[in-house]
Image (cartoon, rainbow, N blue to C red; front, side, top):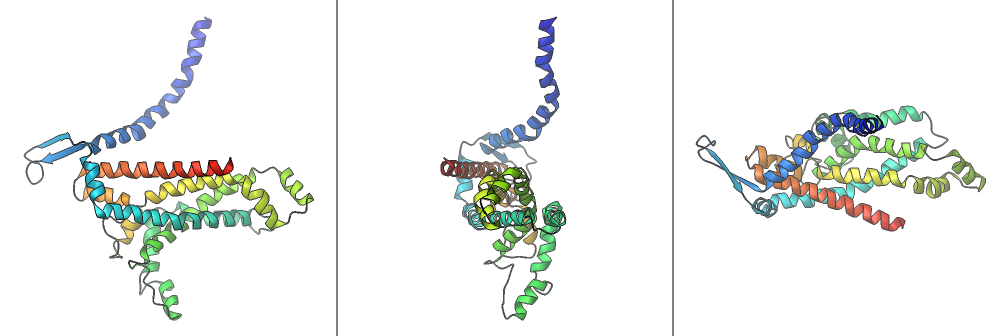
Length: 298
């Protein structure tokens, strides 16, 4: 009886986890394995649309070499790296300042402002990009009109500015979400820590710099990693703004390039290779950032 009871107790967690494990395998593991396998496969179509037959063969690293030999794809990688170097620190600083202000003792209506800053995250990226496209479009945009009234001629959809117009959309959309992560970490700080700091004579700035910032480091690391991964996944914003900005081509970002290779050129092998390269780049950058942070802490 004890043996049967022990076996039943051993199987019970796996039975409870089985629905999640099945869904995880079908929606996460299987697509990854399939994409990796597809990246080493070449497909040849006989006829205009493959009506005379389709054959597939092992291509080795040919798809990867073709992807990396595409100057538009490599340019898109450097473009999003520049995007991340500028946008991620700006957003993390803004998120930290907002969280500290809303959690300060003198904050007015913090619940209202937390909800207000979080609302943009609830707007789908496509809708947000459409809304901002009207704010960037000359003749419709009050922002452009105000700048022109000051004597500044700025083309927010031009080649020099459109990347930063996208950065503005991303920051507006995700700052509230990251801010709530930081606020949750701030709320986890024990009240005794604040009381001890006040007894030692720490003012608001000293409290934020010497107490709160060190204790919210895990939240800042988490939001930074999320932002690095999100930078390499830019897709909806350039796809929407492409309709109003000639500066954005079909391979403006790595994700957009993989999408175009698959659905515009029917080259699924190269598209899969590009997707794997994007995933590896996200892993390497996130890992390097975490190692850098851990070394500084040690």
